Length: 246
Image 1 (tube, rainbow, N blue to C red):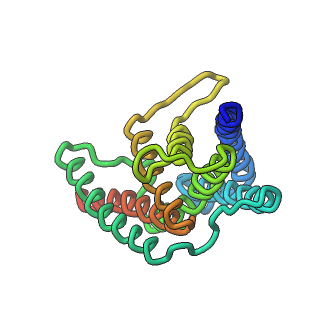
Image 2 (image 1 turned 30 degrees about the vertical axis):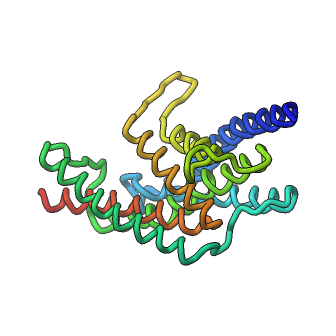
């Protein structure tokens, strides 16, 4: 019994690090393809097309991997409606809370004189492009890669879901760590690490919430909606406050 538990634990650790490598490779593949596309005439400030192609490539590869693994391992990645009633309830509660949070954050930033600064003008093209990216690609791509793929494979490796506290499970915590680490900018050659501690904590907490909803509703749809809505609310509120303040 102890040997079986040890084997499962080692399998879970191995899958955790394998997921880290796969997620890094997916990111590199996304940029490899996006950098081949001449988009400067459409997006001269490089604020949405490169990232959009990057995320689309990541999502496509991840979906192919999920299709293959679902057939080989006979596991369910929850690409289905699941618990619609509770799923939509969670999305509604989360979105309402995030409206309040987004406004409160930007009121605070306005009061302390630390409003967001952008590397591009807030014209119609850039606003539509960046908000379109946030709405249609961030949530879908990142929830597939960091929630559906990661949580499901970790459960498979451990042999079952492992409760930590309440509705929080070990696999959701580990997947959220991977998601938070993905928000750290680093390279080996040259060796550089850029850490935004608020961004990492923000990603980890949202990862936990979305992971819980994923497991409770047995569907990736609702975490995707939550992720997309939170991003567009935070980014869009920033645009609105900057426009009103100028």
